[in-house]
Image 1 (cartoon, rainbow, N blue to C red):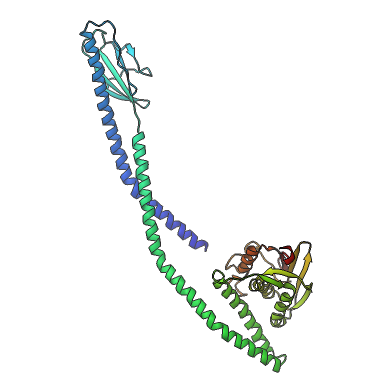
Image 2 (tube, rainbow, N blue to C red):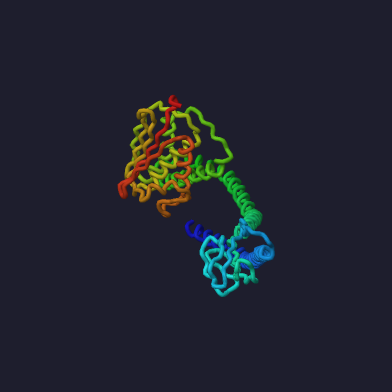
Length: 386
């Protein structure tokens, strides 16, 4: 599973990298083009403004006016210098040393230097300035990225949808196949179990028959888990008043062949007449899977303790074994997790147990020591407390 996730992450990263390359190449050329256009536009605007200021100076020089109002602008600033490059008048925000170049940039400000004709102020040089801004370009880039992202998401949606169609059809086919197969298996399993019970009553203490019965009952537990797993989102499991004391005794009796085949003793401490509001099918899955696992991971000639008691505001079911113990109690409820591959199973039993308990508000505790055994504790709400 971890390897599949890693492959999936690598695939997503590769797709993201390809997308970044596809988007970045045209964006790179667009930004370069916009920067060149911005430089050209700024230069043209500075030249127009410089011409405007120079014309005002020449006009005043050729007139009889006594006061001169130096042109001002919210976009441009300007200054005039004498032939020694000393400031005559300046609206520039910062002091500027006049370079030899006609255009130059200092601190995000673009400057244009213009030589003036003779005038009344004795000014020989005009400097005009404008702040360099790429706000519009940034807005355009952002808008382009948003459009590309939307188109990519739209395309990805349709691609993923199309690519998932075969998987959906396969999953539907597989689900129908499992349902049909389980339907076909149910009758022969019941017939075999019934006939084995009959043979067991005729040939008492026949080890071959008892081994066959215990193996078949193992199969029944797996079958019922698969049936519940397949139908859990389709079939309804209505809650009723369940005598959990009686149900525990019935399920222990069901597993007696398995217990006897491994010579495991069962110590029952079951209080009578304890009731819960629960689905019988779901409650049976909880009890069956827990007992089945206790038997599966217990050594021969050991003991399993099954306790059912009223404890304050809860009915507590405790199933304790003397088995091999659990290395990681946090993983045992994960789907498809198995303590070992030798004991068999699909690894869905305890996952089903946890889902049922979470659905019905049953608190679960697991205590385990390696080579000493495990205890599963289930805290049910009594029927009269609901």
